Image 1 (cartoon, rainbow, N blue to C red):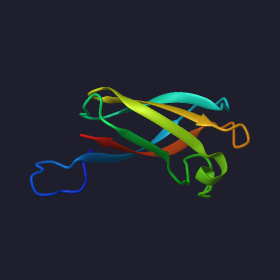
Image 2 (cartoon, rainbow, N blue to C red; image 1 turned 180 degrees about the vertical axis):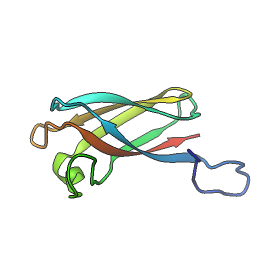
Image 3 (cartoon, helix red, strand yellow; image 1 turned 135 degrees about the horizontal axis):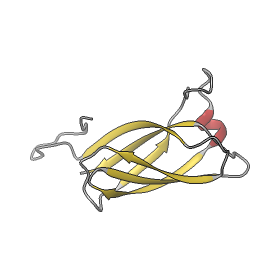
Image 4 (tube, rainbow, N blue to C red; image 1 turned 30 degrees about the horizontal axis):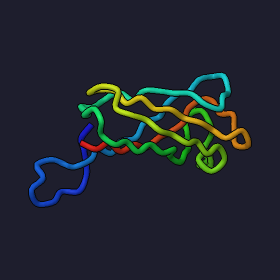
Length: 109
């Protein structure tokens, strides 16, 4: 994974890493859970933004409406230099959810 970001005078590397991942959150429908994103290197204590991406998702057809229909809220932190720990919830009126879900994330360097 190559970091991308905005270069400004004085920076020797991008200020953020932007990535995407598809996670299998399991076969049993749930309203909350957690998962890990592996990669890095990331620095402990840096800010993370995680969002649910639009589809289509593997195994769920060709429609791209999961992000509209399921509405997953996320938070996370840098667990170690190669792992982000993410927590997700889905409101009862929008869930439960299961299977493959796509997420986008940004990590500060």
